[in-house]
Length: 128
Image: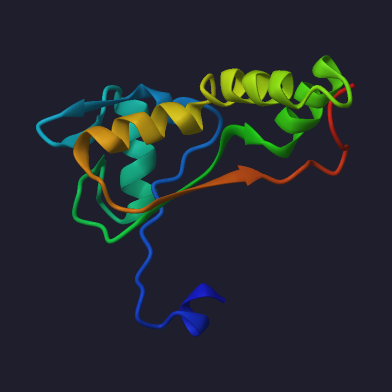
């Protein structure tokens, strides 16, 4: 679907489940794997690559503990009408995600546009 609509873009997916991408570190101008398991996963999914460098036009960070449910949880904790408190809570929660950690590492190697995309709600809905 992406290839048909954006034929001039060749995406590379550095994808790994859960929080294992937090095992990447910044070294020599790239994000590199600090563990063999993550390196194997990335090499498999990217057809041989195991580091993220600054050669891409843009980056998309999806999920990695950044979810729509964070907003629901923050609203539940802060109550209706407490917008400043809600923004502070959201900022605190987002900064604790692997997505934000990954963005912080990317910013050490590139200033390229980066899009943060939350994971959608699961079929079970938000946590209660």
